[in-house]
Length: 89
Image (cartoon, rainbow, N blue to C red):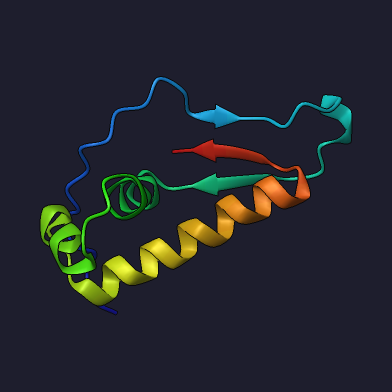
């Protein structure tokens, strides 16, 4: 197994937890979104960078960036569609 590369993350967030507006006892699951995944979303979807540019900013390969982005989008979609908590760590 390859050692994990150090990823550059520039995102700063005022919140690290998002909870749907339903009674807390009804929330069945918490989804963990890694800070690297949040950075991938920010660079690609918010700043609209090309994947190669975004990967370079994070100091990772384009395929690694793509995997982070796909994972992040799946987690965020699952949390929104299924009313799950989303925690950023």
